[in-house]
Image 1: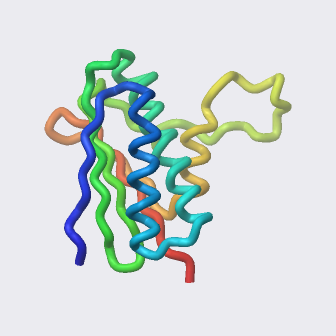
Image 2 (image 1 turned 90 degrees about the horizontal axis):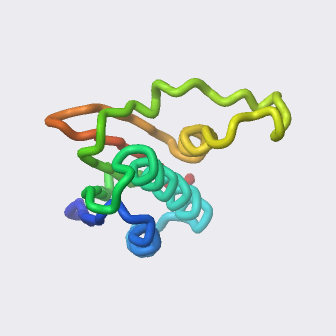
Length: 138
């Protein structure tokens, strides 16, 4: 089993491309298909953006991203010390309404749920811990 890979970034949107690039390198090395890599990058970018914009609301917070290979999957744990927020508590968006009728935002968590194989949250020791899992395609 490969050792986990950990990145620490500040809560600054400008840090996201580096996370995305490292994630791509890692998943390619693990043998993931390009579509799975893109889906995972989308989910991780969305999760980090939410932490930065809605959690910290300032650039001096810290976000820790830990990627681990777990048999036929990658597990990505994203931890932050922003105020507690459980994204799993959000209701599913109403996709039956037109775009003009919907409120702005609210689709990011929906997208994460759709593209990832696992999506878990816990609050522990003063940290929000979001875990995303993507399995390799058969």
